[in-house]
Image (tube, rainbow over all chains, first blue to last red; front, side):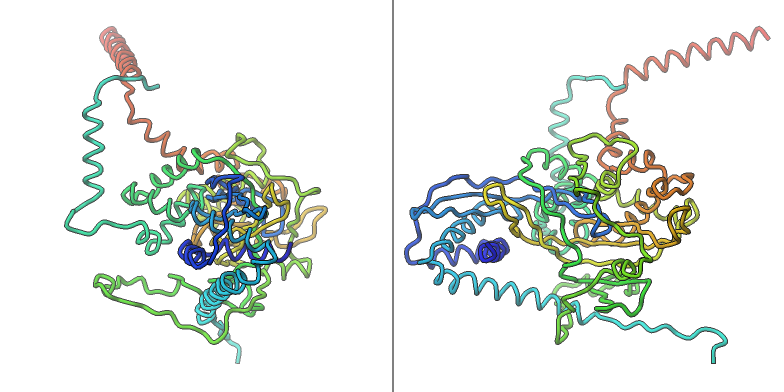
Length: 146
Length: 361
């Protein structure tokens, strides 16, 4: 499942505009039926005391999920942060297409890899801005020291 | 006690209309958009998400707009909204050691692996009003370093932990699911899981004052800001239809590890202990206050005398929630006419008796 985990993570971070553009560029978008229509609800976000200790409930986050089946009997699933049902629908559709050995290479090349590259670039850019604020404090020698 | 009253429908409807008009302000001035609030008031949005206990920047922006900037009212709106949504899942515990860092500092170690990263902070600003912001069209640009921050940034508390100087934090046997205060009542003595959930959604002002009191001597607290980090963490959950964990996006959090000296007890050698603060968004003051109060509330478990307000878990946990506090204080505005009438009669009777006694004397 590592490959599926990877593309689902990329799809979950894509904007609706990006997914719409990718969807409309498909030559033959598949027919599909709902197994679970897009539904918005809550996920309780958990954390650990001290970072690594006992679990506790930090607070909830809005999430949207859906499950669908394509005409080729591939089941696409999406769970994404936020309340955008269309974004969840598109993410589930691409998840289904990526499970199909015949469509996967093209979807990876045209959708997943460019999204991953854009996300990695945005993250590196943010991190380089943070890195520009890296500081080296030095302590001054106090009092009677020579 | 207040009693039900009837009437006033027109007055109430007109008060809503007046509220809407006054919230909108001068119609000649462009209306605020949610994107403007979410994008340009991220710290207000962070507070509303944290204390509203719902991570959703767009909804928090809507709540702030609707509440005309009253953040406690906005928190109330968000809390009310969350009750309309079904709970679909609980996430895997977020891993703050793998945070994509925007900021990471330590006041305890100057040379820590990965370095000190100031990030977007008000700490070193001069607190002089910047009149250039009163003009439009300022397009600030951040400096960009050649390399990103180090991918591996160990937590300071883990570094101390390697030497055995820091009391370890480890899951209880079997790593049980935590208490959920949104579904179960607060129970005393409260476990660390209840306390941390309560504090994470607690009022920043209340926790700030309590944390401050603990520093000023109202509890035996000698804290260092061991580490503060802010950034994005991945959120993972295991969908029922898949059976393996998937990544559903990132949220921004701020984490504070306060390091406190602990002189030890009969069975524990002297070591450092910690107070832990974790909040949604960039809410550093709240994370620090939470960590101070978390440490104070550990007094019982560490065998320290409990004698200050910040160590008293019933006092702290029962009064930290600003939705409850605001509701109870503001319910005093509701009609208490019958109650007050009886008090009025009682006072009149007592005054009459008092006057009679005076005359007799």
